[in-house]
Image (tube, rainbow, N blue to C red):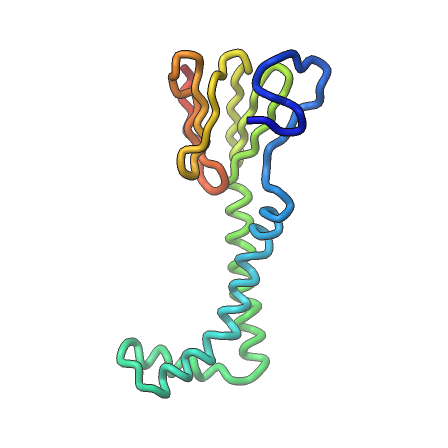
Length: 159
């Protein structure tokens, strides 16, 4: 795990802590993606629903007719606003549940929401991702931390 010249070993006295978080592109995707998806659904849902009702799609026929009834610009705008707000709330929750890793000269801090866990750097031997989960092992391969990367609550087990 290396970023901005700070590795897990060696003498790092006097260096600023390194914070590992979302990249710029990842941050933009997390902050804008759900809201834009909501707006896209609001615009495309009535079109798709009218088509499905017109071809007499057998599943949820009443739902397609109701969704297809949204046909004026202001109805689509209200629907888009509601779904964009829902998307923004999803973005807030994703950011809140994301783990922020701070690598300092003497310790590594992991913060997810209101929870913070710190480990002395000398205690850490190996760091890797297991699916979407960050795993930290000590020198005897005991699990110090098993928690989420983006999206999930941390579970730590001091070794």
